[in-house]
Amino acid sequence: MKIGRVINGTTKWAGLGLLALSLAACAELQTPVQPVLKPLARPNIPPKPTAKPPKVAKPTSEASAQLRSYLNQVQGAQLSQGLLRRDGGGSDTPFTNTMLARNFEQIAFFNEYNSTFSGRGGPSPLRRWAAPVRMDVIFGDAVPPSQRKSDTASVRSYAARLGRVTNHPVNMNKQANFIVVIAGEDDRGEALSQAAARISGISASSLAPLNNLRSDTYCVVAAYAAGSGANTYTAALAVIRAENPSLLRLSCIHEELAQGLGLANDSPAARPSIFNDDDEFALLTRHDELLLQMLYDPRLKVGMTADQARPTVQKIAAELAGGGPV
Image (tube, rainbow, N blue to C red; front, side, top):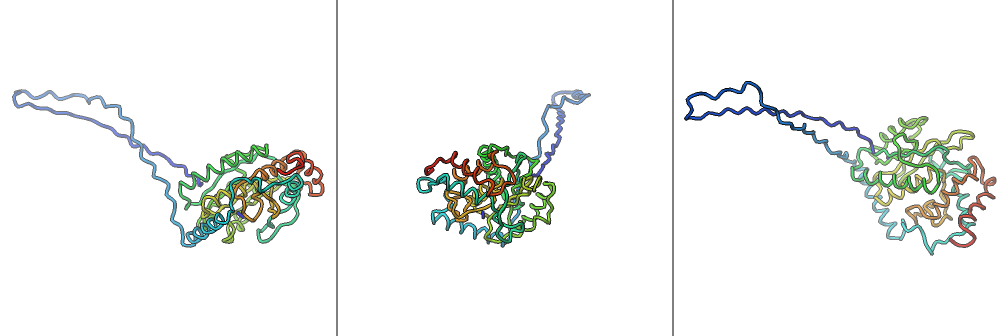
């Protein structure tokens, strides 16, 4: 598997007044210079703003530094093996409508983890969002400004892409129901508490499994369902380790945000896909876009089981992929 804090700054203005009084005397004159009886006109000088102090990230602990080093080694090793591809697949990764339908069933109708993230999940009915998805990012205090800027841009761009692919409203909004936490070992707990305070129905204690991540867990997402049969997502929270190097963080953004829309599982048979634990692909592929398109096809209904949905899934897959390799 693959959270910025918003700081409201106030700008203080210091008024600057200037009064010039000039007294002159000349040795040749026998009479004193008459005094000025009223102040000279003050020049119109605008107040000078006080510079806002730059945002400085907090120093990290030794544990966080070691984890960052480890994850950099992981990314390097994966790249050296030809993994974390960013090309979306090609002639070496063809797939048919039959493969697409099979992969969709495995990824959309099963959970990757159980509710405590301590083991594999089981079969699941079809789940997705009905309300618009509003995303925002919360960063840990140790995340530097440059990383906050680039990661926020990545989430914003990807949210727009997810909206286009699913034809469902997905955008960035401070009134968020889908929060992306990008934080490290030292500040993840505080960032999760901030997230819990912003999403109704989620307590800080319920997020404990997201705070206690194994070192080989780069990122994770939890989606919360409500409504009839509790199959309609109303909130989601993705957690991404800030210690991840840039490509792994971007890979996490792609996978966790897509999974948080309803593609909750991985499959070793899915290719080319980010929904596969082999990490061959880092970024959302054309195959994965079709899975998302299928998930939000109105012919599929929330709460359907795999057996109930199979004929419709096969029909949609044939429409999207045809009969031959894609």
